[in-house]
Image 1: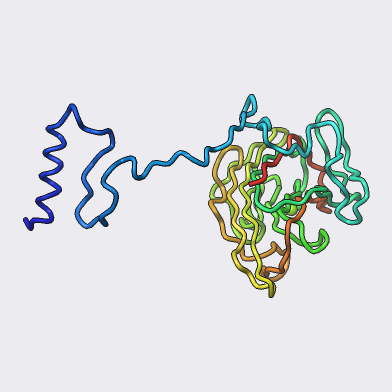
Image 2: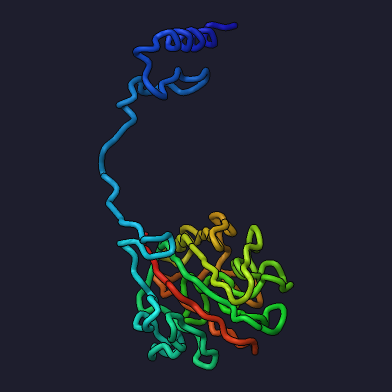
Length: 269
Ligand code: MG
């Protein structure tokens, strides 16, 4: 055995013998590792200290630094995506239900990178099939005056076949969900999303693309997926430069009964 392999073995033996002085987690550098600090303190630091955030009473409840976008009582944080008029979806019994003729609604605030929690429910007795069965969606950034964006699909995919990159939990027509974690109609479901907005250079070219991670009912369905641009019904995704953007909820024109949302909050990152 060449000397550079013998030496770490000797150190390991020596450390193992020194039971009273051994440092937890201390181990000799493996052969081939770059040379570096030799004391544990050299790789420990104490500032900046992570700020304190008080969690909600449950993991669904907004933590102390969340911006609550819908708490069950009103749509004060939302407007019509079409013209900025008051959001005209129906609020009652702690939930908001899509009013399809009113069109999409979007947040008054704009966001860049964030963590989002949102819950949705397909009505019991939902009818239709494919894309025409409880279709809605969450545009993680609403762009081009509410006409485009990056859609996390909402659909009844409990027992409903459609193209897989258009089922619930997909990034529409770009990435199917890793698994189908749907609950059945009538039950509340949740998305927990980490959104990293795209960045653009001064000339409009992409400096870094958008990334998204999604947990669907607590199950990972999008793992740092790199988007190819806005999500399109027809055509090839593209990027068009934008800044901070609203979050938009889709009023899809399919004839099935409208779905509901509740407990929507966001943490800016
Ligand atoms: Mg949709």
